[in-house]
Length: 196
Image (tube, rainbow, N blue to C red; front, top):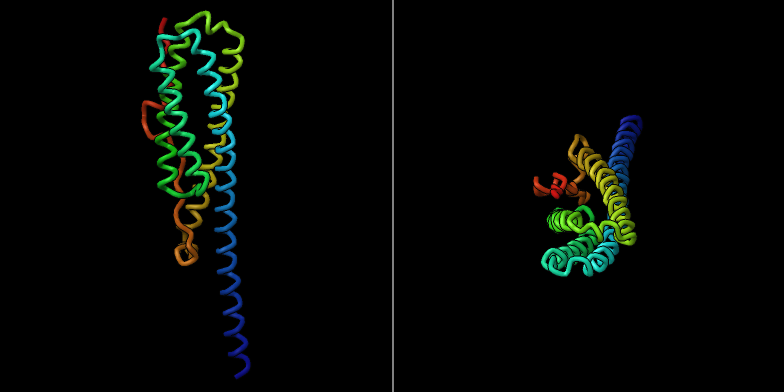
């Protein structure tokens, strides 16, 4: 009578420890992708801070390119707002889709601005503009690396969440799928064309 009770208790303890292990692994992976998103957020804020300086520097040289400059400023504002929403909940599919759409618009507007900048030799030669362009390029590279780290974290988390035996407990513990940070529009994957 005592031995079967001990066996049952041992099985229950092992099962509880197993479930705790699954829960802790999911928490760890969720925290990793949230941290990875925080790195994207830092770089996006840097990008958003650089854009007004870039636009102000370009304004004096490109007075008749007002539409392009306004599009960049508007897209920057939309992307900043979407970034705030995504930062509040980095794995939320709706917030991430909003951010991806806003970032696609901003990337397109910046691409158009870069094409216009190429048409102005005096502006290209301006030391401040050159420095801002270099900083923006560096920031874009950092954003790419941070996006890759975030997507790697989300993939690990989603894989763990969707594989057996975690799948049996993930929903019960409130672990929902996280959204990848992808470029939405295929045209955004291409470099802007510069013609002289």
